Image (cartoon, rainbow, N blue to C red; front, side, top):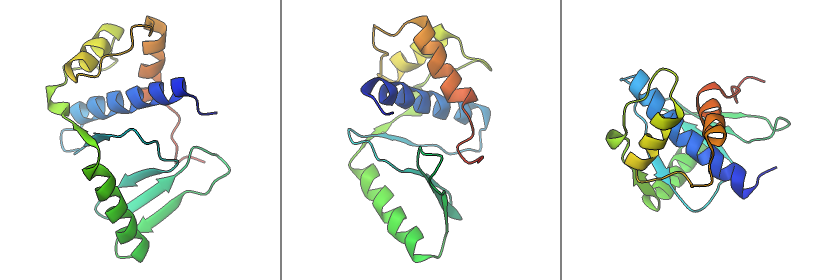
Length: 141
């Protein structure tokens, strides 16, 4: 069930994961674009394909290979969405350890000018770290 709190935690976890993985895999190119709208689909785009998933185990994942008409349609849609969103500069993010601490995560979000809500406890931030780095693989079904 999607709630405001869940969307907030998932959003912070996504940003944390992007920062952590980009530091771990230096050849990985990640861009994060923030929008007030929440799509119901998840798009993972590469130069060869597009993977479309939804947070529902009963739904089928879609793999759209480059060169197929749907690939071009969705790429256009994604680019348009990015144009209307705010780009997050991940280069300003503080370094993170192999297993980031609560303090490292707080500093990271302050650096990104996305401060964590004051009501977030250390336990809440621990859950964000867990979701960001140890979540269930959405493609393994």
